[in-house]
Amino acid sequence: MTTTPETTSVPAVAALSLGDDALVLSHRLGEWAGHAPVLEEEVALANIALDLLGQARVLLSMVGDEDELAYLREEREFRNLQLVEQPNGDFAHTIARQLFFSTYQHLLYTELAATDGPFAPLAAKAVKEVAYHRDHAEQWTLRLGDGTDVSHERMRRAVEALWRYTGEMFQPVEGLDVDWAGLESLWLEQVGEVLRRATLTVPEGPRSGAWSAGAGRQGLHTEPFGRMLAEMQHLRRSHPGATW
Image 1: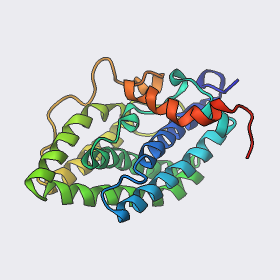
Image 2: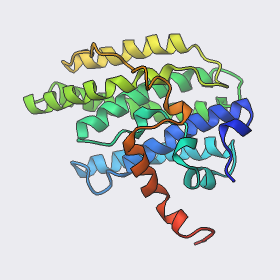
Image 3: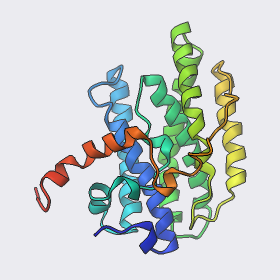
Image 4: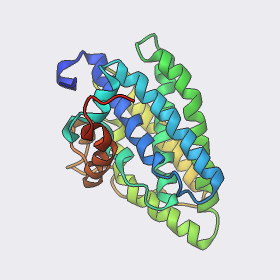
């Protein structure tokens, strides 16, 4: 039986939420292996995925057995943001997703690292990794947004398509004592500045819908997540108890 948020202490609820974010996005980025537009990007995305996987292992091990939590939970037991589960799409979609999430994660881990709470040691180490993730996404956003007409249009579509999932990042997470409103304000400022430099417009649409605000944290996920989870868990579920 796996451990779920309902049966764990308050810090473990937060650990599961943050761990699932990192785990799911790591898997999504890993899907680029063999498919990235250039070899250098294949290596870069793989390294970011490995950084996130390392964070996920630490966070999930605070809750229980990391392998069981990753491979044996059902879809409704995952507490990741809906943003990180969105399909890679074209390269511009991957970059927009990475810009939105890594900017949020860098701000959050910076604040957590300054506390004496249970997540401070992880955050102090991870914030250095996430700074690279954010810078990588920022440089590609500028390159695509302020590039050719085609790259600009693809980046514009990606930003607008994923914007609706960004509000959920600032829904309070039980067990994380942070200034959510302050983080959101900084996020909007930093992401807005990158988009403007990339000659892109900050979307005017809502950053969450009534049906989706905080939904991922409640175990409600979008349709692509079920297919991704089936792929991720297939080997372990096909050979239960196997070791190699």
